[in-house]
Image 1 (cartoon, rainbow, N blue to C red):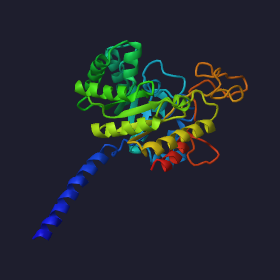
Image 2 (tube, rainbow, N blue to C red):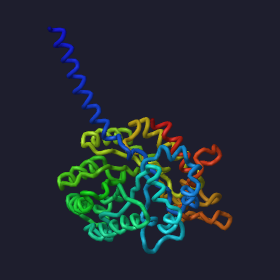
Image 3 (cartoon, one colour):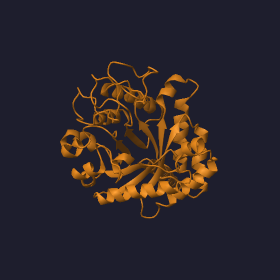
Image 4 (cartoon, helix red, strand yellow):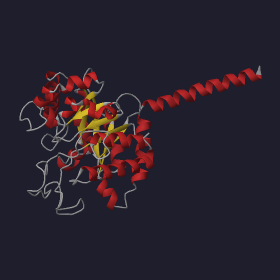
Length: 349
């Protein structure tokens, strides 16, 4: 009888801890684990839908395709990769057929709308534009409402949380899931954790959290303990049952080539993996300007996003958000964004 009770106790404990482990794992599981957000002006973005065979391997790894505001606004559309152009190649229908969800990076609290009221209307217009183009938005990633609210609107954290919570609630019900992107280390771990608690106190828990790290600052400011901070954030978001994601980008802007973009991003991938393993969400996103090939390096203070130092000998894509190219994903001689996805996920197992 004692043996039977002991066995029964072991089984019960295994079930209990197994359920707890499964619950913990569920935070990072599900379809939204790998996000892809190509740069606005990449010349081959439409080819991703015209020539899908060129990214078959990486496409099988991607769960979410994220569009920026310029790509989904119905008016004042950009010269390349506009909503009309995406619609012409059936982008949204093809993403749906491939089982890839659509996300939008969108404004919430911004310096031009510290109450997030106009931003709600703008975001709703983006959602309607995607619907009219044959798609459906599943996720909204808010573009740093905390940073905007504190630094540009001069609000308290509680005030920013109140306005952001109203924004989140406006899309509740059958609307998209709303998560947050915030900067680090310009905002400390304590700030970020306090921010999430402030949102929760307003009854608006974000669906996910994506960390936008200033990698250049992490490289030069040794006072920042990035490893310790990443581990603490992973612990915190696991406890809060909020998927924790990290944006993978080179951390320097502009970059001079695809290879430069690839190598710097892979360095960040290895750094994150060594600290915490694979985050719940892995986001491959570019908003980087292509700099001149022969006039400056990434660390040259004269060469920055506002002054990429393009010359007539540089390609027409110089000075634009056109790096890296997206295709193909299987050519060892091309350091494309989709190749980066394949190679990075081999490290982030």
